[in-house]
Every structure is written in structure tokens, then in C-alpha cells.
Length: 107
Image (cartoon, rainbow, N blue to C red; front, side, top):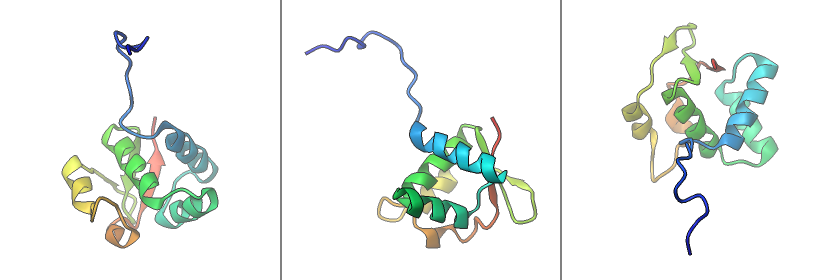
């Protein structure tokens, strides 16, 4: 069975666009997001915390969001940094101790 779209070049983001929209909405309410807010959001919307974090890190890697440490300095994050966070295929809150700052929507 062939797909109607098989010959079209469609850009497919490497992140969950529904979660992206939710993150942007939440960030606009507060100007930034921190881990506590992300955990609260995950519980409120019954979304796995690591799905949100994976989406957020992809958005950072693609320069749509930025991470600022607790001193307000933007910190660069690369693919290798993100890959190191995975334990058994998931990102867990206890693996994010370093990220005690804020995530901000930039584009």
C-alpha cells in the first residue's frame, strides 16, 4: 500500500509538537520553567516527566529554548550531555540535579 504523502518532503520535528505547545503555554504564564514546575505540569496533565524533558532538551538542541543556571547564565547543552542523562532509556528527576536553573522559550 502506498502513501499519498510518500513523495512529499515533509519536515518532521525531532520532538513532540503537542508537548512543545504545552511547554510554551506554561512558560508564557511564568516567563520560565524550572524542574518543580515541570514536575507539577507532568502530574497535572498526566504526562511522563521524561517525555517532557526529552522534548525540552530537543528544543534546546534546536535553539528554540535555552537553559539558564541558577546564576542566570545561559548554559550550552549538546547531544552528548543529553545522552548521558538516559538511564535504562529514560531521564529521571534524580539525574537532573545539575539542572537547578530555568528553561526559557526563546523563539
